[in-house]
Length: 269
Image (cartoon, rainbow, N blue to C red; front, side, top):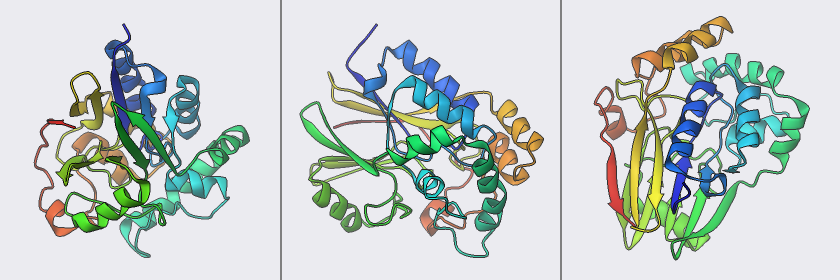
């Protein structure tokens, strides 16, 4: 049954198993594809880049480009994730990114060329902006600990009251000055909290209630597929342990929260 709910997704990272499960959840909630928004990085670390794109496309949801889509469509030699040169994440990307390049078809590269890098939508009387990282730098990281003044610049430039962002991999909500910044987390990897759960967001336009929600899916099979394709075993392990191999991209505040199970959250917008 159709209702007045909206669904928000972060990076699927080629994790077909998680994407299939969230599609089931969306259908059970009666959320139609036109009310589902994906903040980019459809492709990433996991084993099914082409299949994941195909499912996203056939589903017909709203998608903006993440840095991985931008790099793939431009034929770039790396993922553009803003990892420091010589870091473990940068080293791992030399395995999973070339794999993605070999797997993604030309028709899906063509689809990526048409993706915008941000989107604006009117929802429940408010202007919502959808971004991946930053506006000038698509790979810019915004965490809960990132100063509000930096986030406020994005609100001002998009003339938005709500921002839904991706890229950092951790779910959070911050509200100030009658504005709301949301990162719904990502589907493709757990949130470094010691659980296999991945994250997404749901907004009920009838009640103005936004929920950060966790999702259980077949992480074991997703991990095994990564081992089979000889993708970075550290990331394959992360799918089942719920812990990132390293915290290189994280500020101190987020690093300190590793292995602390996150709780679902509800706020009014």
